[in-house]
Length: 162
Image (cartoon, rainbow, N blue to C red; front, side):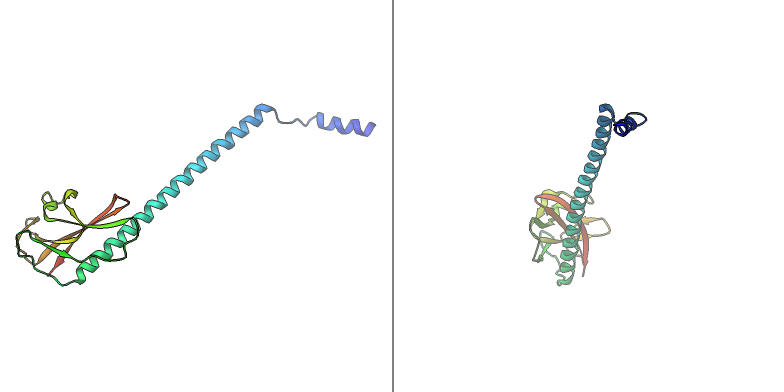
């Protein structure tokens, strides 16, 4: 009986248990850390999705512009000052590739997206005045616009030289 009493006194003496307040404070700190971790995880996941979307759009743009460059140059000598180039196939689901018609360059370098077209268009370009013209001088401006799920992602402009 003496040993049992000494054992129970050892736990009561210098050793004290956690109080309810200490447990609640520890749980609150743990909750704050968990919320911060989950918030960081969500932000990283969103950034990864946007980076993947941007990378796909850049790849589509490069592919389309290289395809336009590989096609024969056709001089634009008509009323509209435009020439339509073939577009690539195999566009990933949810993405769409657009071009820009001549009136979209009226306020260049600002682009008016109201004049986007389902085709890639080479517009006769006067580099001295930075404006679209009707008669081809050996230089065309080509703009590729990428949308994903109906939302704009990327616009890239390049030139096609005769």
